[in-house]
Image 1: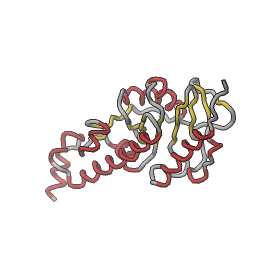
Image 2: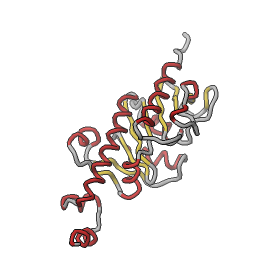
Image 3: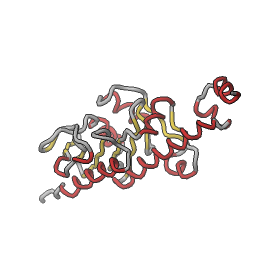
Image 4: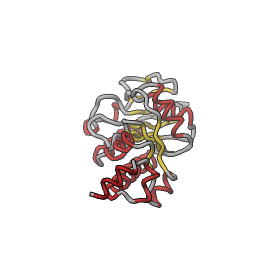
Length: 212
């Protein structure tokens, strides 16, 4: 039996990446998107800005990381493959460099979830993986460990990764992770007392700031 055409799936991946760019969740060629179709991983290429990406430039990989056809996959292809190997139910992975979530990943050990909708989607917090060099198996395994059975993880000094049963779900989670990070950082402006222990703020510095 002839394998189904990957063309419509390539279009979905490219469309998802362009959607991220249009909504400010990636800039230039940052971030990456992938979709699992059977034993094939379709992933955005390296070095092509979101607004210039064409459907045919989406790269196909097998589960060993070998390119099927032409093109150069995102430098984070190992991250995507590691997640698919560890979580067979996952069918889509979205990694962004969205500014608020990336800021949290640079300065906090996790992203506490402050609002009810966020807790429904992510639980009590989005964990942060241990730091590792970008594009390495070390980073990929660190992300898998921190992600566990969850739906999102922060890469330290790097950005969020969201997973889903389909691209729509993974995109929604990427959008909501950024919203959740924005709410968290806005809350720091007022330094609500109930957050002091949760986010690891220095209580003496917080007290001094509030007394000015």
